[in-house]
Image (cartoon, rainbow, N blue to C red):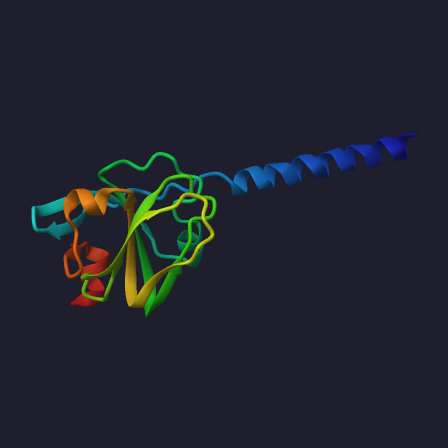
Length: 161
C-alpha cells in the first residue's frame, strides 16, 4: 500500500508542478522601467514614454504577452542585434498595439496600427529595421506619427551614432 501511496503522491506532485510551470509561462513579463525616457519627435513636439527594453531573445519573444496594464505613456523597445526584416505577432497579447519599426538611426520606417489582440497574423516591418517600439493602440494616430519621425533613447543613440 505504501508503494501505491508513493506513486499516487508522485503523480499528484507531477501534475501540480506541471500546472505551476504552465501558470508561470502565462505570467506577464514586466521589465524595469529604464531611467531614460524614450522620446518620439513628432510634428506636435517631443513626446516622452516610460520604456521597458527587451534586448535578449527571451525578452523579445515574450514582449507584451499577457499584459493588460499598458498606459498611454508606456512603451516597450525591442532592440535587435543587427538590422533585418522583423516580424511580430499578437499571440497571447490581450491589448491592441501600435508598432513602430525603426532603422539604425531611430527613424520610423513603418507604422502598423491597431494590431489585433491574440492574432497569429504576421506583422512585418516590410524592410530592414533595428528596433521596434510597441505602444498602446491609437497612439500613432493620436500623436500624428509619420514615416521619418525620429525616436530617441540611449539604446538607439548608442547604435545610430
